[in-house]
Length: 527
Image (cartoon, rainbow, N blue to C red; front, side, top):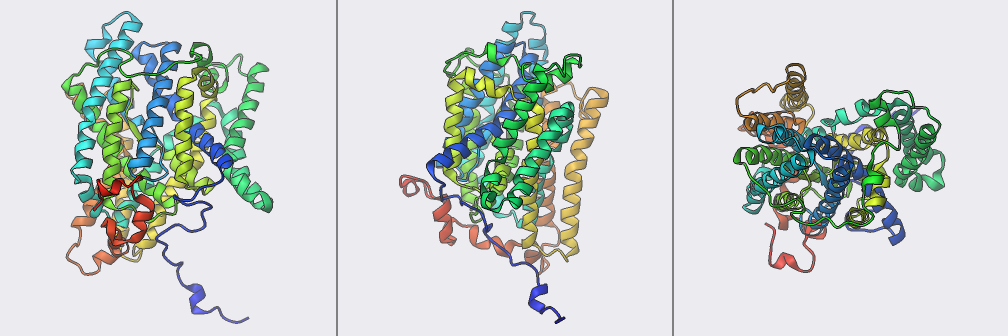
């Protein structure tokens, strides 16, 4: 047998744009297919929306009616923010939804002495909601200023592929607690869901070549439909009748209480719970969460651009997206969405699963969000999907964002010990430090930084429990300080690959993917 040629043993070529996607950022599937895919994106973001409301609203004193109203409100602002971000923001196929990072400062506000002493539950809910609204509106100042003044653009210009790897990777990997641990809370439903989505999207797609694209594109819809029906059969058959209340909440399809509580038609509107109030300490605590949301959203922006087969995002475009994310904080505060916005990690992963990065699809998803935010009863039916089904989907979708980050390894010199140290250390610390902060809180009941100010404690806790923030900032710091004078450092970090994307006009493809619509680039030029 002839010896293989040297070329056959060479490394795979570096790709500035991800190949083999079915539809890139600017190309579109047929309208009927785009509508189905848009509904699938809506379905994926619904899990986080329901979970955030389920965590915070009962602690605020709200019941099923208030929970349904908050879910409708989050859907309304998420739809508006997604449209703004895809039209005039970062312009990638990104869905803007609720963020878990705001739960920590929100809980500190809920349990503060000012609201904890209120006996009437509804009054406590309304007053707490107003405080959260004021804090969210105040927190919007930070991302808006950082984005509009171009300060985030400076950060992005010194971000190399090497520093981007921990940022993007930990954006997905840092959410591991929302995967199998949540799935296992009802293993009878969660594990079959995980098996089914893997089988349909990977194995069935390989076995049935003519239907390969169809199986891959609609695996989420098929899995949710099948396992939701399976869960309904188990519920009707009394399989969970004698289970613990927690198991029944996660397994049954009739435990959410939303269908009966939701209105048939209700328009969420600004200041629906009254005039917002502001405590400066609470505002700064939520502002820390806004900073974490900026960092994590940047990682999601980068991943969504990659899966949309677009070129690396120019720093000015990322900064523009951050500014509109800040506007989203203000919008969430006006409407009373209990949490701030962030770029949805699970929806970025969906771009990788179905290999469709079309911007139009996510805009259609935004329309579904607005539609179901008004027709509350229909949205409540979908919100009754058991959480372990969503957790099973997250095991796949978050993994795609992790792999998007690891994909940037192709730009770096992996034979460099400097590269190995920065990668290994930032990834390890990015997981280890948040684990420490979470463990201390779980064991002792207070944060590692335990001062008399709950707001300050929340600020530190929310920053250091974000793997993407901790790992990304450490990687960036090490990359710009370690052996900077060495001649090989620039190439080892992969900076030369992204050099032509540092300025908007340096590569013609930037105009194709990221230019503003309706000739707005003329009035708001990117640099």
